[in-house]
Image: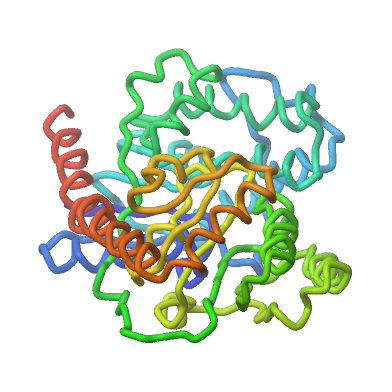
Amino acid sequence: MNILQALFFPPEQPGGVSSMVPYIQDRFTKLGWQMELFSLPKRVRGKGQEDIVFETFDITEFAGNPIVDKYLQTFRDYIWWTRLRNKGSYDIIHAHHPIAALVMKQLYPDTPVMMTIHSSYERELILNGKIAENGPEHLFLTKLYGELEVKLDRLLTVSESFRTYISPYIKDPSLIKVIPNGFDEKRFKPIAHENAVPQLITVCRLVPAKGLDVLLRACAELKRNGHPFVLHIIGDGPIREELEQLAVELDLYDDIIFYGYMLHPEEFMPFFDIFVLPSRAEAFGSVFAEAALCWLALVGTNVGGIAEQIDDGVNGLLVPPEDPIALAEALEKLVSDPIYRYNIARSGWDKAKKVYSLQRVISQLKKVYLSYKTEV
């Protein structure tokens, strides 16, 4: 079979689907399948000109809204770039972003197009303070789920919690198949080490949705309780300066290292002890599985896909979102007891290898692709 994986971000971008799909391509290629990757380069802006029409709602009611207009222009740019650069024919197109999915179905109407919905752009914008809940931008972005349901041949998503999240916006959520993300365990090499001071690490884009302000307040509580640690923050984003200032105000600046952007953080993670990320929302949370494969003890919030990855007290610790005291207490359990920390990390590694292996994803996707080909 010849399959196109249609991304939005270029595949060299780290994190989540962008880092996973090239490994999927490599595994399928070794099985003798043809598989191409396609995405929109960042340099392509303002090129597309053609009108866009949706079947399930009238987009003209959102005309003039800056965020919606920018989204629609990106839609036009994706059409322009696809017409210019993509001349192939495919048995199946598997998209990983709503724009990519809808454009591919428009340009390849006779080809089965399926999409994995990896996250909620609207939820991220709300949590990051960019749009208001139930505002016009929120309404537009949630209406896209219905458009995807009507136009595409199959929908998939990455967690049961995210299928529940999108259920109000579509007619038949039972038809959405859940395939959690998978990771090539060969990329992750746990390293035996002994850190005299517990080393905490978080890896994310520095935006409000990730809850790093909560993490810093939890670390301040941990320090007040007399527990030494170092927190390593890998990632960059619009609130970096705000977080650095908060670290100063909380008397934490000497206990924290801000690294900025890093292309392959998984090469760095095995030297640390605890991975912590108190996200306010997370469709899956790929970095938790990656950290588990590096043999780190996990601490996360009881939201979305994080709660599906972590069995509290077994292979990690879960805390409520927006609760720095509970987060500090969870961290204290791990920094004060190396044996408990080791056992939690070992259990996390065991589950990640069994449940979130790339081979499991390949097997499930292969069945989806072949069953659909049989149907048509």
